[in-house]
Image (cartoon, rainbow, N blue to C red; front, side, top):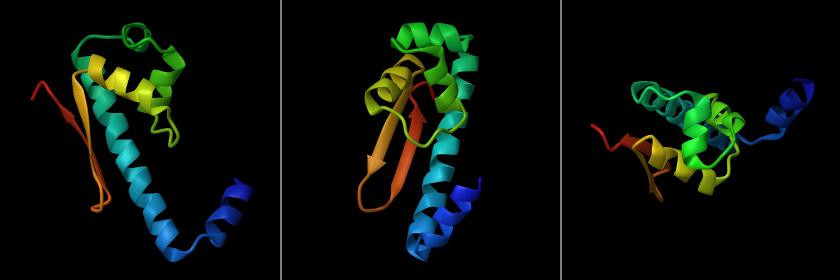
Length: 100
């Protein structure tokens, strides 16, 4: 925790704002993944099996881990009926359900 405080102090205001925007994006992606998984009646283990990854990866996505392998994330989103949209230049990252 102490090293994190030091790291934040050394970040510029712009970097700090970008960090928090990214964190909020990850948390909303996490919430959408968890919601869709539960709506499909899948356990983390079953979703992981279908996506070809480990249950721990699904757990990390649902907790909003900031650094994830994109290929694994896309496989998981596909299994859960989600599509990831990235708009360059706007700083926006959105996950949308293909079921809606």
